[in-house]
Image 1 (cartoon, one colour):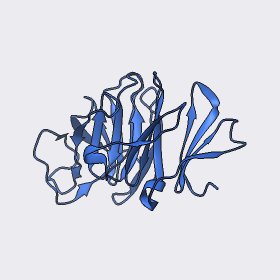
Image 2 (cartoon, helix red, strand yellow):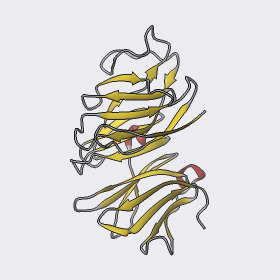
Image 3 (cartoon, helix red, strand yellow):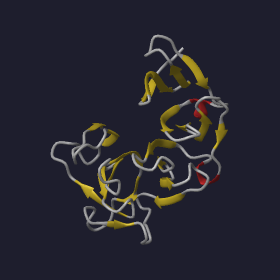
Image 4 (tube, helix red, strand yellow):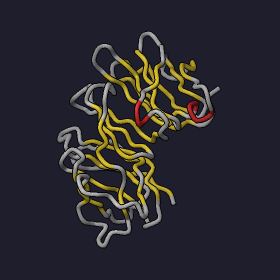
Length: 219
């Protein structure tokens, strides 16, 4: 039985296939949502809590899921789950986003920072570990190559990539929306009128289209 739904994903190659990430696992429907089958359950409560997922479109077509305790992946046509190792093996992962151009590239938002892989998680690099809101001017550029203070970290929640310019990346964080124009190296906080209060959390950024974004938030 599907309980709380955290994320839904439609397979663009077959829109009858829907994936539902829930607090008790990952579910799949092959008939447009009429019937569901659980295809991932995890070994612990944190692993069961699937919060996001992404598909690798090119062969071998694979599915990657973000949980409250690491990332798992499996071929789509033959479900056999494996856990991603390294620094993300025990991370609370909030979001996985596939690059709209490069099928092997993914961005990952977690409690350990923002990561990028160019080879389906065979290896990955940390782009940023978080933002410090106690700097003298929190609206100025924040360069990930500089030493980062840790007085009050602002954690990455969700990511959106401009499909027409993949170097333009938006990040929903616990202190609003940040944007990078160079693929994730330098970030700038953006103030969108009426989006949220200083204490608000941005939980979802919708697809970037022609430079327009939408965001859901809560305090």
